Image: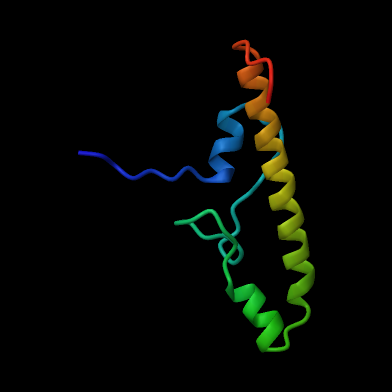
Length: 86
């Protein structure tokens, strides 16, 4: 029987040898999907909690850095096995 598995970014980075520390934050991250939670955006946009935008900007930057680090970790691992082009 197949089992659905979704690896999270904060679990995948150390498993692939990345030195980037990406931490789970329950307000911003979904534990079931690879996305940011919408409540922070909703709070800033519709409820006028503009102080949330600083946290959102930080989380988006960290997410993009984590994705970049993941890409570099994958490149390093596959280049060891003679992948000559990306």
